[in-house]
Length: 341
Image (cartoon, rainbow, N blue to C red):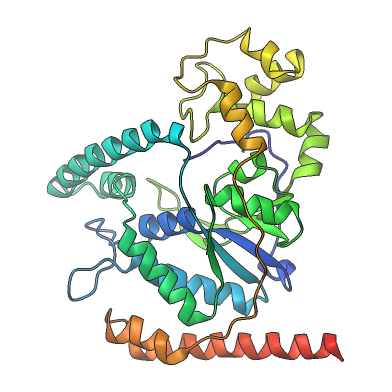
């Protein structure tokens, strides 16, 4: 989902510990999709479920990964989507159709026992429900992790907080927050560790990547407006395919040559219902609101109730992680006290 700027981005590999003391705005929907896609049975592609058949992959991901961030001294703030812009409706309908087609292919792959296709199509069929989002918010409350619902796109709200120095960076796998003007983007924040390469018996170590907007613009020799134009040409959530024949590098070349959106559009075949200038204006001025970062307290008993009593998580494993969560909270309180003194 979203724009792909990897080919032209300036990436800096970092360690989790380098973000200690920082507040990171987490693109909640992006991260929940990630958990639902990754945390699955390798043989069937099915997500984790409790004894009543309810999906719990998203709860597992949030609990363990948010605790890992807190242990590293990071304060995550989860940002959920509000009302999507009207011109995104067609894209959402198209994605629904793609998921339905992927589900049929996934079922066939299970019959054939093709593990790679099972992995691929089960991930493509991933669907986030309102119930899952409500469960995620309830768990975050119990963990003492702040969350908010933006007036529109979650990435736009996260970028707004970054631009106004309320948070240090945005945490997401998507690049759109840079188009919305975020000062910094951290990728791979919730998938650090060893991962198997698709169709290979090879494992790689994934570490967080930091992308600083000003440095990226300077390295590319463009303005932020021109980065937005480059992204639109490549393809965004509002024109997913992008302009035919233009990947990030070719789109950048065209923008460097033509400079403005009007001039660029005179050199391409725009085949989307939504005008390019409307998408550009949305990235420049998306709905967003101010928010204050709060110091919330975890409620271990409520966490146990949600995960153990209601969703059959292992009591021992939850207890061990709760001890880490409580340790992280104690360390944060000590740090705050030392700064005060």
